[in-house]
Image (tube, rainbow, N blue to C red):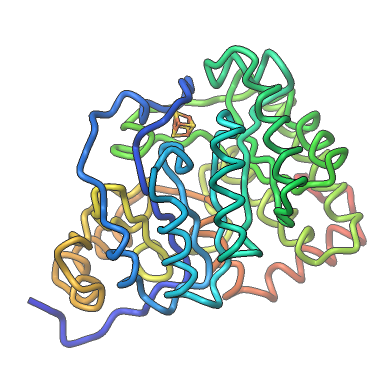
Length: 335
Ligand code: SF4
């Protein structure tokens, strides 16, 4: 059954294409999940054309044998969307083969490589010996083959918080971008791993101050927005509140490798089965509306780039005000 009132259509999505993963991260149990029936390449031809940002994720997405065809299909369906592939970066050769093919169809594809600390710290968190060096090889390879937009993605945990600024500096040295997130708990994503991270407050504040101050000094508005996002992430970590309201299940969705759509990676409310249902029907179904109501009435707080991006776009004034205040009165940053 469908609702007579059409829901707002999404602009942002994380699309998990496989749970298969060759990492052994301490904050995620996806790699322990059983094999499952994957979506077909043709399913991606039915994605909503309103999407402007698509994050191809996993598991490790480059392990999917059809990743080239999937990314190509997403681009053909969504010619204006920014496409980023989030990878653990461990399989340099395999990634090189597949990204070289992808670049033929999506020359502006973006790639994020997870780096959770320098050298042994990264290897310890990711559970892969020599993992850090493999990732650095992958970053160098991505630059060589012509990926223009590369980012190091840092996941903050209790044990690596003192590496926050070091990985930021590494990104700057490598001439690539830097993003950060917390290891959040989810009832289904991360293999339902529960993360109760409580990093040392002083180290956390020092790390965020370091990153925010440098991002604000840049001449790039994009980096100022990143600074705003980081400011919000710190606030979320210390007060469990989100700086702007976002709308998972309306502006955003998570499509899992089984074809099930959820409002986000932390909202375990099924909206529908994309494999068997047209998106329009699914998005306006009672099940989807019920999931949205649960998101709205629930107490769960979150601040993730996937859901925050559209919230930031809807509140440019709040971002501008924070930017001006932080530039004029740097002592107010995280005060
Ligand atoms: S966090 Fe990513 S790389 Fe690590 S086990 Fe989970 S899916 Fe794999």
